[in-house]
Image (cartoon, rainbow, N blue to C red):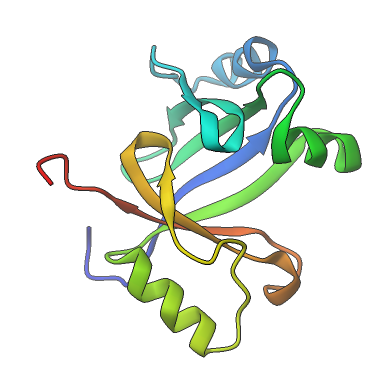
Length: 141
């Protein structure tokens, strides 16, 4: 992490067909990792590609036509779902944001993709953009 309080980690795009969507971005020149991750708690499968040294593109596809991403696609169609910013301490940042008057989606952070502790700031308190805050969990503890 650099000396900033937060850095862009990824832009997430909701897709209904992960293979088709991945091909579009590969045709642009992005390289996806071979690993796709299922996040059962959010009922999605994810695929990540590096954009630069910090940022990634995340494709999120609903599992079995269920979950919040499926509802998003039904309501809005495929497209940008959220922006994610890496922070040093997601619990502390969540508390700070609430103290500043922002509304969180989840009362407490939870484990998301790539072994990260995450929470989401409700778009009604950010001018219409769903924002994820994320912290890498130390694999040793």
